[in-house]
Length: 405
Image 1 (spheres, rainbow, N blue to C red):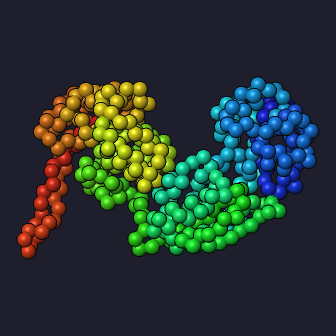
Image 2: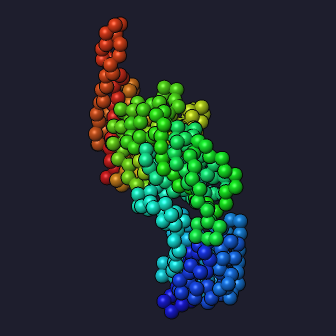
Image 3: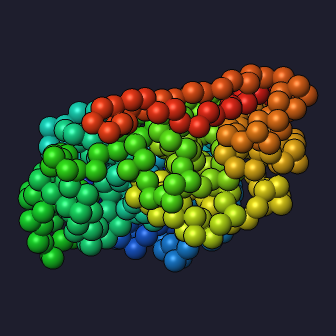
């Protein structure tokens, strides 16, 4: 352990190897009793290693106990570029107190890419597909957006190009940046719809300048997206009502929603689209609808939406506590409202919709017991009446909202 209390150094290294390291990084490598890292990282650092060199196991997390067991020795963990930018730094921060650990980062692949492309990093969308699904890309596909995406391997750029073309973004400028900072660095540019390379270095990232075609599937940034964005069987909260519901639910970053009686999954999906850190659990009793929810989540770019196929309140057992609950189906059962209410922490929100007299009665009883707000939402849509037009009322929605004190 060093004089200032840290024993673990997480050290970022680039493709230029030891030549790009600071004096402090060089000293840390030379003094380390053991250096952990991938085979590529250890090879890059080899000229300075004096202690034991240990390659990562197939499952990275399994190495952490072995590292923690050597607390008090001088240990170095090697990582690519900036260990706290889609890297292993946060993994160790969960287990090692901050005063026992230091980080010596190198420029991240994102920083190097922006330097090569002349892009402003703070104005660029950053993604990683290393162990993460490609289906998270669609919400980022906005006109003229710039995106940098770390690749899992040599096939990732082609998979991105195929997804872009399939969704109507085939004209997008696509740049593949390989082995940045090293002797094998290469930068090539093409258009998504004509992508045809099969000789890409596995160490790469993809830069995108998004250009949509007129029929591109651009996901709007506000809630209340049109029903055409969702596969459904008619069991979907209409977009005007959905916008009102999301405003009432008021999602905040990192919060969890229970979407009970999810139908198409639209409420939970839009909750997750409000912020990448948000999560939702869709509870749906119909297996076909549950499968449809999964497809919608994938199409709309929130593949991590969790789906529970079951009927409330039984399906709510053992779920993590929500920050908010939406009941789109099942609100006429008092035990569903009761279970959801009991699961909410202080400050949690419960929102329920009803269209039948029976559900409205249940919501009125909940209002009398819990307080909150009870409103009716009336909508009329213009429709043809023979050769003329008239407004036809939609079914009235009764909305119950209550915040838990």
